Structures are given as structure tokens and as C-alpha cells.
Length: 150
Image 1 (cartoon, rainbow, N blue to C red):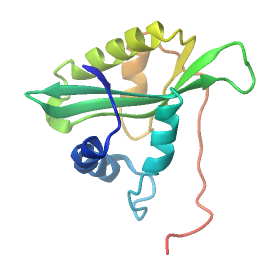
Image 2: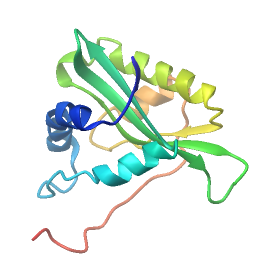
Image 3: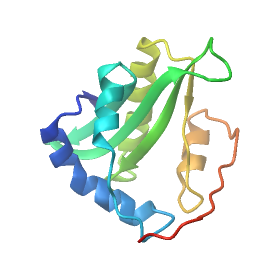
Image 4: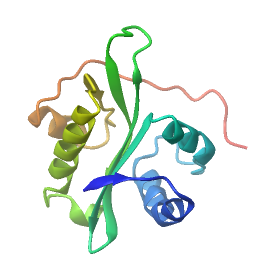
């Protein structure tokens, strides 16, 4: 498990897994995956993007992507806000997720992050998993679809 740089070759490699991730967890199923890679690259250039990847035999089996910045309400605190976290279905229960969370904490700790936030879907067991690793429920996020996909 290590931090990886967002390059064009990495984007090409990770995109099929991102699509599987979207198909499994997307709340609005008609939304097509279309990451804003240019913005991710800009965040990376200014040191605000941390993409941590777990591999087995060179193949991506999980990832955790964080946006790191000082909080808008508490400017003295550096937050790592999880953008995506995923472990491929065949590797769940293999401790990859635990290793990915623990490695993320170590990597983000070196960056002097004060607080890590994760979001969890109501449709899976990610929240209870994180609670076992010492995370606390602090908010609930709700969404309402205003515009249909065209």
C-alpha cells in the first residue's frame, strides 16, 4: 500500500475499477462516470491530493483518495476528506480494507493531518467497519436529485 501519482497511465489503469465502484455504489444509477481529472491533477500539483492504493501482484485491489486542506470553519486544523474508498469485491474480508485505512492514517499523519473524515453509504457496511477502527459518526449526508441526466 502506497501513495500513487495521478498520471495518464494511472488514470487508464484505475478507470475500470472506478466504473465497477460506481456501478456498485452510485445512488443515482443513470449518472455516467466522468471524473474531472484536470481538477484532480491541479489538487495534486498543489499538494492537496493523496491517492493511496493497495495492490496485489501489481493489480489494484483497493484505493482511498483524500483531499487535504485546512478546514473552512476551523482554519487551524488540517483535514483529510475522503473522496473515494473502495476495495474490490473479491478482496473484501481479506484485511485489505483494514490495511488501507491504517496505511492512510499513517501517511496522512506524516502530512500533519489533524482530522480524517470518511463518508459512508447507507447501502453498505463501511460505517460500522470504520467505527470498529475508532471512527465516530459525526454527520449524516442527504442528497436530493434536482435535475435528471440528459
